[in-house]
Image (tube, rainbow, N blue to C red; front, side, top):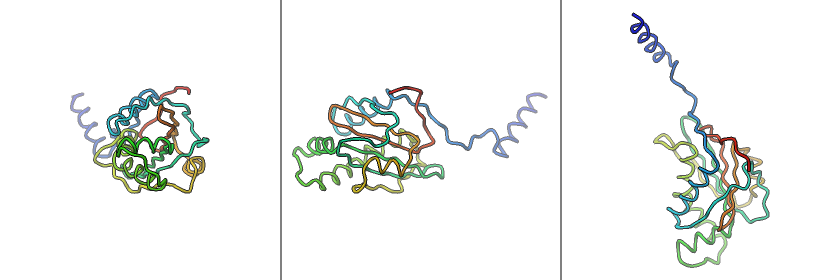
Length: 188
């Protein structure tokens, strides 16, 4: 009898939606896991050894470097999720040289070509990792923020998580308002 009662209760909960979480599943990520993922992505997509290290786990955009910001908006489970990423121009130059075998003199062409490459694969892969990529994730918008500093972009955006990294090739950051992950309690 207890088995039948349990089955009926479970069936009733499924019918009314109880017992099935409608909130996004949040995954807990450590900074070292994110650093390894970034190193893997740079190595596998761009053949660059980065050795990324988190230098600020609450990045607010303060930097003396020349950074180019890229904003990508995704839709997942009816939510709009933004990923804001920035790359030091020195790093962009290294990426372009690695991909095409020569430096590019026109700064605007360098920025747009490299960010286009990132938009095509790198940031999408990283965003999928942070957001929890699945078939329900769709890119809604992708834009380069040329007239705005990282500090201005992050102040306007107010992300849930904002991380700045340094590497052998240069500085970069990634920030998101994704409800699908949070950082493990670590200090940087």
